[in-house]
Amino acid sequence: MRQWLRIASLAAGAVLAAQQETVFRVDVRLVRILATVKNGAGRLVGDMAK
Image (cartoon, rainbow, N blue to C red; front, side, top):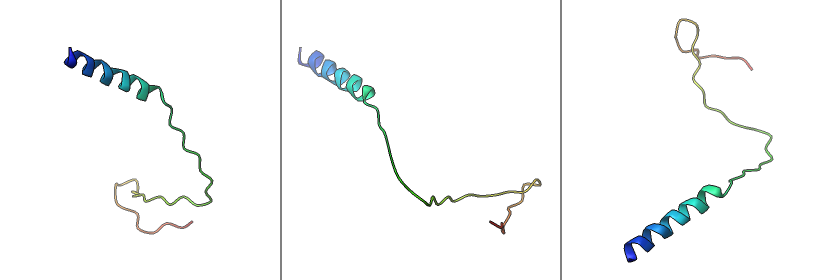
């Protein structure tokens, strides 16, 4: 009986967690991105202008 109750409570918790929507709101002026750029031949491009 306890095993069934434990499984039912875990399942109910999983359903409740799946229903919650996560929202991230931010106000930023700068986003830093790390990127690797390659040319048409597949070689790395080391210098890029803005």
